[in-house]
Image 1 (tube, rainbow, N blue to C red):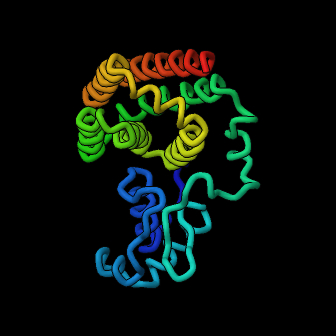
Image 2 (image 1 turned 60 degrees about the vertical axis):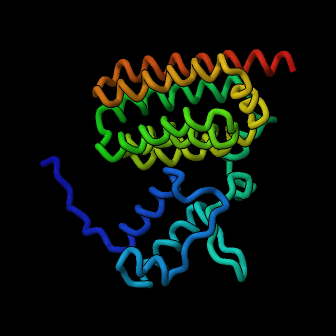
Length: 237
């Protein structure tokens, strides 16, 4: 029979998933200090032992790091272990800009189709908020870029596939670190902002309509536009 035993989920697993979700969604930002064990235990109404186990898993998986005398912090992308093969392949000397964008097409076009099928009301509310912030913060390039990344990570999380979310998170960490200067140029032209706004709107609307095929098509159009712009800027520079 196509059934398997159901594993009872421990409290520490639930705590781990909630903390990891906050990191994925950008609610706990890179470089930000986590609340203390005591504070987290009080907020989540669980034992400090459960908090400790959850944080230990986050440490083992590289999501956070301990800083002596300061506490536990969400880990910076460039601070990941140097032997990490993913980090090595994503470095500018090993991967071309075009190769990175090709991978992004495969990852995000499939992901947004899954998101259209699986997104909860909370997922959609989060995407609407990130979309609104992208629009409102356009004069501030750094805030707009942050909201842009959270919009795309929100789509990844809406797949409810932990492997997909982790791959997308790590991909974004390294990709944006590698092409940060080029990506900043994207936000300097008002024409680009209008195009990106419209593309994001279409993607979000397709997710809300549960139309995975359209969502995937709009995502492809969006990434193709970004790919062309970044390629042109890279060539000119």
